[in-house]
Each structure stands twice: as C-alpha cells, then as structure tokens.
Image 1 (cartoon, rainbow, N blue to C red):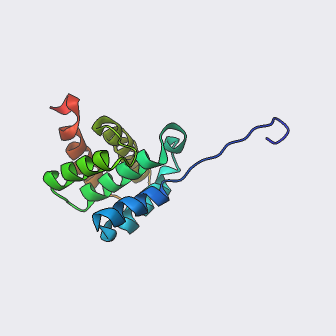
Image 2: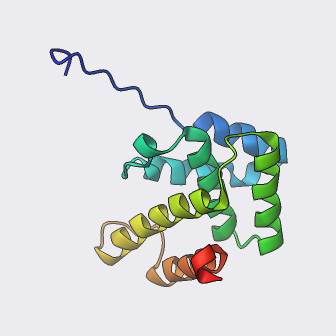
Length: 136
C-alpha cells in the first residue's frame, strides 16, 4: 500500500459515544454501545458514515435493545440534533442501525455468533420499521 501512496485514515465512533452518553447522564448504555461499535467494523459503515453518525446509531440501537420507550428514543434523537453532535437525520440513524441488525441477523442465522437471538433481531427490525417513513 505504501508503494501506491495509499493513505487511509479511519476515525472511530468511541469518543462521540462517550461524549454523548456522558452528556445525557446515560452511562449504563456505554458498554453495549461500545460493543455494537466494535461490531460495526465487520461492515463498511466506518467508510461510509461519519463517526458521530455511527455513534448516534449505536446508542439508538442500544436504547432499542434495552427496551427504552419510543418517547425516550425520540427525545434522544432530538437532543443530538440540537447539540450538533453530527446531527444525523432519522433516516440515517435507521439505515445504520438496520445494517447493524442485519449483521446480527446474518451471524445468528449462520451460527457465527449468539449475540442476539433470531427472535430478538426480528423484534428490533420491527421496531425500526415502525419508525421509518416507509413503515408509516
């Protein structure tokens, strides 16, 4: 790669995850969000989206997995947009979250991991579909 003058720098979502959760006073989501961020490197999301947008999506997905109600999740998205932490649109958050859920679905169906059961994956997908403009 060096001979080709190839230079790739990937910025990580860990700092925005920590900063956002500390600002919200929601440190209990930190470990799950961090784990989901680690899993995101099994995809090409880090090459397609800014770290702050990935951070918002993994925190949002952590909220879904921890059964936060819709009002809390909506409030989170509103707070992030107002604070300027990357300000992703809801569609972007859902797209990133959906791709991560699809990753978990793939691994659960192909016996490559047991992070989420197939029923839990389907439940999360259903919650995400209810939020998407196409699902309304």
